[in-house]
Length: 166
Image 1 (cartoon, rainbow, N blue to C red):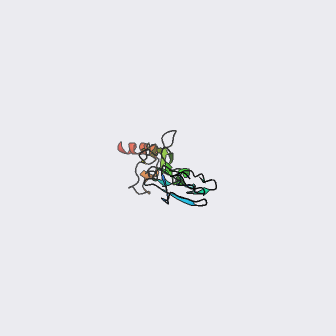
Image 2 (image 1 turned 90 degrees about the vertical axis):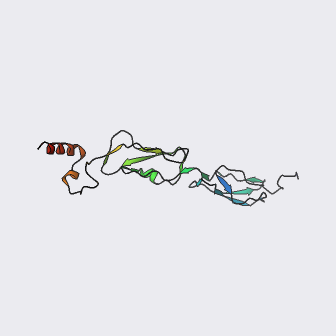
Image 3 (image 1 turned 180 degrees about the vertical axis):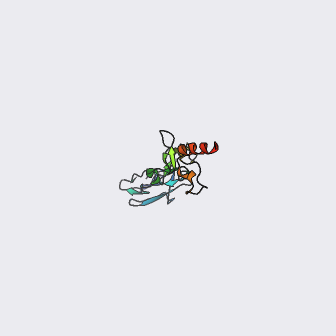
């Protein structure tokens, strides 16, 4: 045996990962040993990925994709739009991922594209463009029974102009 190398039947320490740390700091792992990885500070568990590797015969570690990564927190909540159904189901938002929004009831899209936001390198969200405009002039403080709130903005504008001429 060479000094500093693991004994036969021993994998030695598990390979280093960027955002994951082994649960054990031991340097000796006999064949059959398992090591579970936890997320380093600032990293989050990637859903659906395993977090355990095993020392296999031949003194090699089983393959394990990095189980943790950098992720933004949940996307920004918007008054005028809600997260798309697809993005609402996510719970991991790696740097660079783009989420899209759909205009809420009572708002209309003013462009060909949907509002969207990107998880930035500093783990914050980019500011989504305000592409949804209220279809009504008065709400939220005017009672829904008010004639003002029963007209879409385009009709409401004509109605309010005619009132000011009286």
